[in-house]
Image (cartoon, rainbow over all chains, first blue to last red; front, side, top):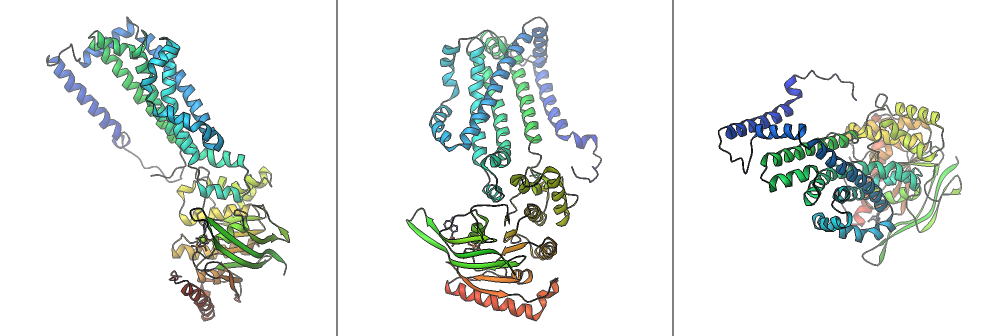
Length: 263
Length: 267
Ligand SMILES: Nc1ncnc2c1ncn2[C@@H]1O[C@H](COP(=O)(O)OP(=O)(O)OP(=O)(O)O)[C@@H](O)[C@H]1O
Ligand SMILES: [Mg+2]
């Protein structure tokens, strides 16, 4: 962006955060494995890194881990995409048109205030225990953060910019395109990031409640049958998915707020 | 000399929502600004300067009187006027080039090639060549104000309206910007209404200085500024300059005393 020469960074400087982060994880795994090796941990209630890794490889090659991943991934992707699109579209309409806002506000507030878990039995009744109930649970989990943030972004329209646009004879449509929407983008992306996190919880919880597939089921089943290794494989997969997806969402957020001055 | 902007018996009241009463902000203002003239408007805080400018810009409704340009009454914002706001009000997600183009894009008076050419021309005029691709957040306050000015000039208005555009700048940057503005104005030959509460700034820049009384704003007096152009900052130390500044100062002080206010530090 600027023409000042980039200073040469050493390998350490460049990856400082990563080095320390992986270092701490490595240390914890090391201590954990040592304790496991010394039989200080009961295999009934806990497990060790090597045992979990072994179970993961077994489940991947012999078991149905691939199928579970595809199943959960599909549920999440479908539900999340629908939520992101619906959340942004409804959010823009609610934020921009006063009439739509007055119409939609009471319904949305009531739905927003209800904990999503409380709706799961109802959703299972409606959609059955197959994949569509999971997709829908992901959808309602991710929809509200996207919606609420989008509406907030549309309403946070900058008065000064609005006045400047008006002074240059901008039409409502031009103001919508050049002031309201670009101003709302950072808010929308924050909503997407929160939606990713909540959608992930949604897919896991949804699969725990019914059905016989997916990573959520794997965790629940592992717990019920004291297959602690299996349970941990599931937990690690969920954690990893959370880290990767949040990281992607953050990248997206940064990509679209390039213009923001450094804070 | 032909009158460009004519304000006639303009009255503005604000209705307060909490109490069922109205506040008189501007009272029967009549003021004509000639073609190519630099008119400064000064007055105590709260006397209605910003209201006056927003009305002329077409951004604020008013109660009585008329505002006309070239004899035609104005309704709402128009391409014949452009505003330089006190806060730069730049779109933070547009580059400097995009911001300078913004007014033109909204008004759709120029084709693409002309817009680009004009944007580049005015960026150069305000001394920001090389910063086209930067974002407003990466510029200093003074540079942002110059973008604000370039955006208004690029829209090719007949009348340029400026509301305390340098108020947020430090003294040094402010003086620099004043000189720059005079240079640009000499080249661009626009009719300018420049609002400020710094008397010193008004006298240095303007052909005439209109003084408003404290609330409700009335036109108290118009001073002619006789100094030759081009003016340099040396002028600010000329005894005649100081005498005129003092005369205006006393008039405003009288006004503020009448309202029981302390006059803001004018330096
Ligand atoms: N939206 C509003 N509602 C009610 N009263 C208002 C409103 N805007 C301004 N006023 C009143 O009108 C008067 C003139 O305000 P205005 O902002 O035009 O003054 P000003 O001369 O620009 O002041 P300053 O030098 O402090 O910027 C003030 O006394 C203010 O209280
Ligand atoms: Mg003001």
